[in-house]
Amino acid sequence: MRSILLPTLPVARVQVLRVLVYAFVVLDILTLSGDVIALAGNSDFYTPLLLARILHVPAVTPLVAQLLRAVILVACVAAVAGWKPRISGTVVAIAFWAWMFYSQGYGYVAHDHMALMVAVAVLPTVATPSAPRPAGPVDSAGHADPVGPADYTDPAAGGAPLDEARSEAAGWALRCIQLAVVATYFFSIVPKILYTESLAAWGNSAILTWASLRRGSLLAHWLVEHTPWVFVPAQWGGLALESLSPVVLFLRGRALYIAIALYMSFHLATLVLLGIHFLPTVICWAAFLPLERWRQLGRGRRAPRTPRAPRTPRAL
Image (cartoon, rainbow, N blue to C red; front, top):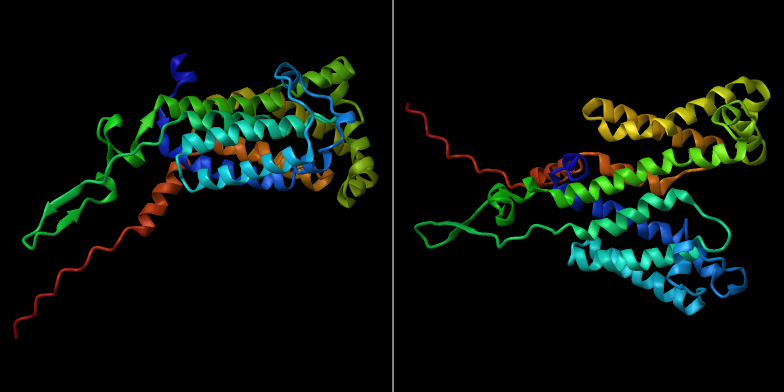
């Protein structure tokens, strides 16, 4: 059980994920959840969520909304730049959660943000390995030969290179995000059962046809007119992806990549047909990927070339 909830995973994976998540948070508050600015001042329509009621979060005012957005933007930039990631990440977590309380507190709750909110909450819990860069041996001229990246070690990881440092803290944070991603799909089954009394009733209904007519694209309208039989199988396919989503937690290698491709194809289809994107959840799927390889690849490209030894002149 410990290996499932607290796997030992690369810290570099968390460092790359931080950049992706915090960069997306900037995009999110400026576009997807940017309605907080417009909602400010409409306190009569404020219906706080349960946690917001427990914390007694008041309705947002125009000044608070502007200040909150500024704090999130500055903290995200600092976190992406690597400035004290635990401090800047904590500021992002507190401010972004407050922002989402307001965004979701006016009658509409977008569950596609759940994994993103979990991500900003757990990423600051992972310490970034740091150690002074040691100098190599001194040459005959008295100049120190700097040690290469492979020798830059983290004492807390038993002397392992920083790019190879692993910890249970990193594994716990990544697992929390993975669980939130899976829960986004799995628990979406609950309202389907509540509204239709059974998954079979929902799977055989005309809900997707109705959605395509109400908000669908030209392609969706064309499918309704010419191939209406595709919608019921598509609904059952979506139910299968949602019901089987916990299996993803136990997949590895090629099987995991195939599963991720299936979920990405599902979101691409809903985007093309219905204009539903689920981008906050899509970004958090990165927690399943070996992101540390991108970091290692970048370091490899920046590594200086080893100078060639002078060629020995041929004897005549």
